[in-house]
Image (cartoon, rainbow, N blue to C red; front, side):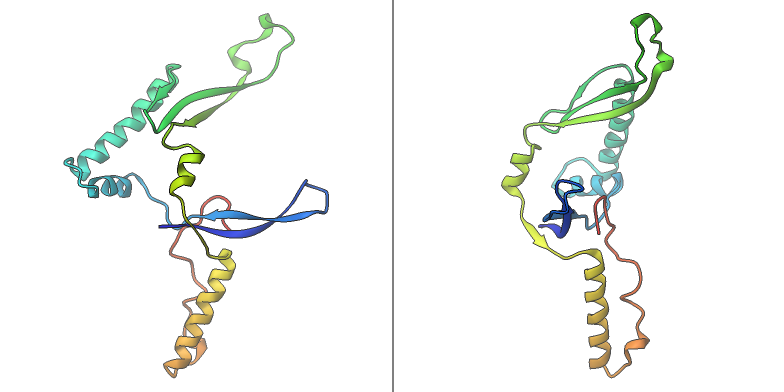
Length: 172
């Protein structure tokens, strides 16, 4: 399976008036724990989908618990999770209290098998156009099919509805 991408025009540097074309990944689906557990099970796992789902659910609960205990959690080649804090600055240490902490960020660093270099070794890419271009192509395909079938192009509403694939962050 290839990583779908579209081309986007970005101003570099911002405010310069100079533009370049870059790749932008497009997601095809969004999977929850249930789908992911089934996928793991389908890889000839001796564990049932239910057992895998239980383990993944407990992992999330335990990961949160340990992070809130101040533990950095390393999950082998997958990577490491830890928390970072955001706070207001104070002029001296005596004035700084827990009330100055304004937020928490979950941080992740990929392990050795999930680094950018490792992922690039196995990745393939397929240009799919922007979401708008894909919808236009579907609408044209539907109109062509209706015409071939002897129907009018106004009888089909299917290119104007929602898309079956869910867009992710950065999708057009």
